[in-house]
Image (cartoon, rainbow, N blue to C red):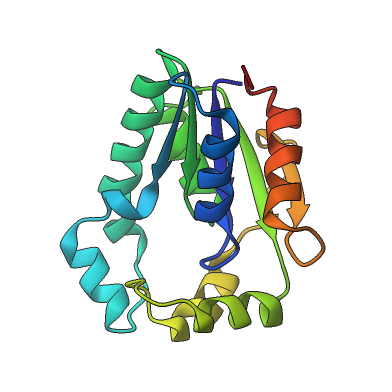
Length: 177
């Protein structure tokens, strides 16, 4: 796979794992993208004020992420940190507005307990998402199935970030040299 999407609820470690992958690989063949960087200002404001996004809020953002995955994977490997909470969102990431995948993606579901992730999200600073929205993310989450797309499930309650990084690099067959 030339595209890896680190997915899960806010606070599960998507960005930490993505940055960890780029630190280990350290070459220009692998690009890391954080989906949060592509949210329009109105989405960030909505979440900062404690309001969850709806599908209409997410559609232009997901289409832009699909475009980025497609473009970046043509020139190397791309690792995207993105919640991708619903199957329909994962389909947009892979297919855009079509029915067939335009980008072969390995989804890495960073799964964890509400209590562990709640501890993490309330301890972090400088993030636009209001921690009170965590429950809405768990409520929205549709657990991915390996019949949807290529999938690795990693329990973040049991592994360190470094262990997750190593596992993803190995399973995704990302180039370390």
